[in-house]
Length: 64
Image 1 (cartoon, rainbow, N blue to C red):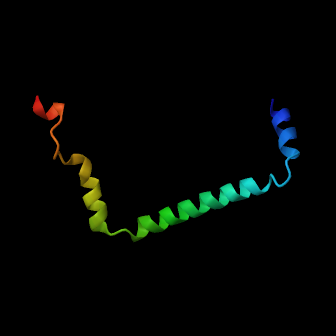
Image 2 (cartoon, helix red, strand yellow; image 1 turned 45 degrees about the vertical axis):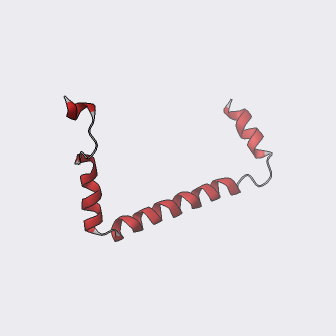
Image 3 (tube, rainbow, N blue to C red; image 1 turned 90 degrees about the vertical axis):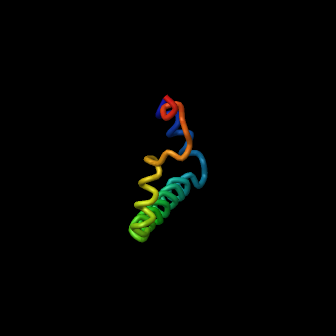
């Protein structure tokens, strides 16, 4: 099965550009994410980290 896929992919012209584009998208995404993590304000991180603990909306568990 792998030989069939490999042989088929070798016949496609310019197929080597797709892995490079994928790597570039991956690298840019994680670079931006890394930059955001280190530049985000501590107050924002603290506020967002408390959201799961707040109970503004009543749920079945809170009503029992």
